[in-house]
Amino acid sequence: MHKYLFLPLLLTLYACEKDVSPEMGDVSYNIDANRVTISGLSSGAYMAGQLHIAHSRLFSGAAMLAGGPYYCGGGAITKGIGPCVTGGDLGEDRLLAYAREMESAGKIDTLSNLADDSIWLFHGALDDTVGEAVTSAAAAFYQQHLSVESLTYVTDVEVVHGFPTISTGVPCATFGTPFLNACDYDTVGELLTALYGPLNARAEASGELQIIVQPGGDDAEMLEQAFLYVPAACAAGESCGVHVAVHGCVQSSEYVSDAFAAGAGFNEWAEANNLLVLYPQVASSKIAPMNPYGCWDWWGYTNEDYATREGPQIKVIKAMLDALAGTTL
Image (cartoon, rainbow, N blue to C red; front, side, top):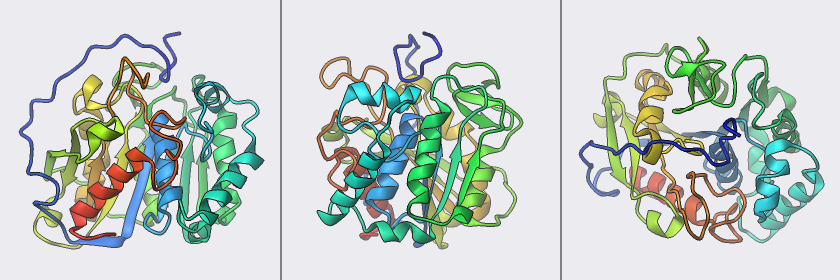
């Protein structure tokens, strides 16, 4: 049972000790709206996909590690932690029909926006927590909307369920907190290159990893604070893109402090390529809604519109992006 990132784990809680930055909206940046992308691990992969589909006009690409197709949970926890984790009958036709229904209802952006987007998908070769069929179903969903050349699917890295890094975290074959795995593999460099094209080489993260307020987080089962990495050039007013990096279950600041935000490798690439990195944070809950391990909502514990623009967590993250830009993106 120890292997299940989605299921009960006994972990130590860590407290953040950084100073909190000003309220969202007090500081804005020169955001290039054509350079906004998103990625996520596990439950964060599901949230990344939901955000991408809901706001496909804004996001130009998405990367998902060990996550499944849009609306896989279908509003039912039994499906969310059943087939959407282990594999099996995901009802791909149902998922595509739901996306089209939400498009017709105006609850997600037009699906045709996906045609020129880039997608990067990953399933670890040693991952026995999330079935490879789940990630393959995500690939099949996206292939309905974009060209084969726009989708990269990586399955040959010998890693368990976690986020591979060059040298940070537990050994590559070890499943454990903070769910960063030292595999001599640069996940961030690979996914950002797939989403943005050729990049400048990673550099020292000499900018600032801030703690910022998540307005409305309490109403969306999110923490009050998130992390934001600000490269020096972005702080100085240069034009910058934004990448949203979404943690997995038991990987928020409640459990690992800033280990994911500081150690996954995003900040080094961001510094060299003028990218803000937003690290939204979800909250755990021991009572209704039952979410004791801080998973993002991919089965409907916030409301029935959780996978659309009306989803509470999606609304909070979109509002944060707007606040960073000082305008509606």
